[in-house]
Image (cartoon, rainbow, N blue to C red; front, side, top):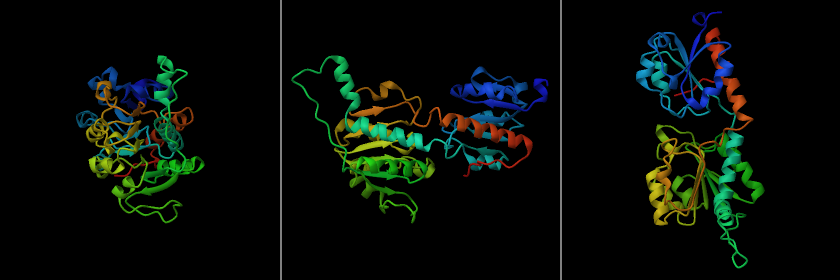
Length: 312
């Protein structure tokens, strides 16, 4: 079959380039970072992309046959779904495939920050460990963990807290009567009453900078802020200011306002554990996301209903 008789797919981000091996036997595949000729733009019918990145409206406007935006990721906060639907575009995503892995990573961030594991390793490697020195860290058992957003990730974090002897409460915009953990009516109250605040809510216009200076100050100089949601949910400037001033004890982050985050932004910012947004990228989750993305493409081109339609 010639390439011109096959459906045409665009991969938007370089880190998704590995999908080419699965897509090319079926579709004509183009990669945005390699450049697009006008004749290719005229044929593209689907974009595969990571949902945390915005879709350039100018690019979309140059794709007259575009019908599907297939987000490889669970989240799709970079996509204006309402605007896409107004143009007749379908947006899909990969839900409920990596929340357990993200929760594992959140617990790793908690342990690393609270028990100063990264600091301890640097101490050993630098030769600062001596017979006369012993680092004293804070015990974790019995601490209070507040979870912002009790979706798949938040609930998975809550379940993991029990074996560590942690007390869990949560806040979200809607009550969940079946949840076994108490819901706190106000976010500020949850922050004030928590030792550790884990941000696990969905990213949206409503949650942009939800964790602002007031919430950070409520968590306080003894508190730890953990973010495995999206960078946009935390006011990053306010967070950095609070860490430098000592108004917040620690921060452990896997997500950032701008990704990749510039390393110089974090130079001189104390008491942080930082990882490059890979909480959900595991050898178990990535194949599941790949399978859902391929199935969305297959169903869309076959005229069948897609299973994982994103909602505005």
